[in-house]
Length: 336
Ligand code: SF4
Ligand code: SF4
Image (spheres, rainbow, N blue to C red):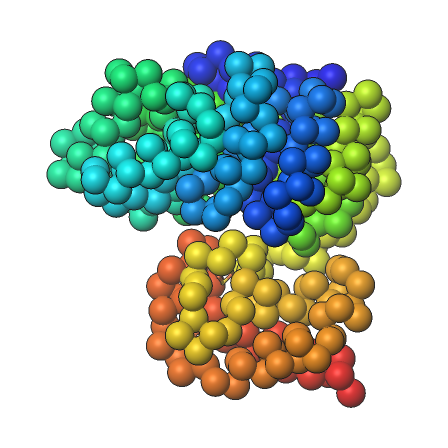
């Protein structure tokens, strides 16, 4: 089994981490089965967030009796000290634990630092002093905030989207983490569903010995794939290299990563799916995306009032309304 050391935290875990965002979408019983199976098969790092509805509660229910054998990272979106403590207290309760291994600021629009007037970083230090958290992390989708966090040396870990579709700048981020001995946790290692071959994603990650991917797992079949790689790790052979090169070419440039930070839309447009519909139609079975439900969702693009809210929140600087329009036009060609 390949292992990863998360920088200065000295946490060493299986290179298969568990991203617990998707378990929100399944029942408590299903989630417990999946989480427990992951644990029993050597997956011992679980990442959640206060913002992922009942994800923390599911981890707590499934794994509270083995708490000291696993590592838990979770996140707060608090922008003030009062909410920080409320979130931390609720996370501890839901996770059925009295400590969190890595507590992360969840995609903040700035890099919290001591004396910045928010008191947020000081609250992290106090939580650490009280033994409620062990390490301080930050997650982000924006490269500028991520770089600032690394340069500040205030964070033990950085969580950032990273897959074989990453740009050179993003690859540099992983190397910088290694140089600074900061743990690197990669989210979206399947690029929000655009990468359909998990073996290729896994093989690519093998090149980065300091990167811990947290695969977003919702189904037992997905979990089984990742577990199978522990004994037989896929290698970056010629076939996989060719696939990666093909995908990099096809997905180069400004595509929607499906992160959803631009939502909600006042017109109810499901931006994080509709703005990448062209890709989904070509990279996944198209039938589901052509259903009456999705036809109605895509039609809502006609109601866009160009308020600009989505664009101002997109960490990738996308012209979202334009992207939606392009996807809508392409979608209609599939319906003919
Ligand atoms: S610009 Fe259009 S898609 Fe974007 S938030 Fe406004 S209404 Fe929604
Ligand atoms: S438009 Fe931007 S913010 Fe919205 S889902 Fe796509 S990548 Fe994320």
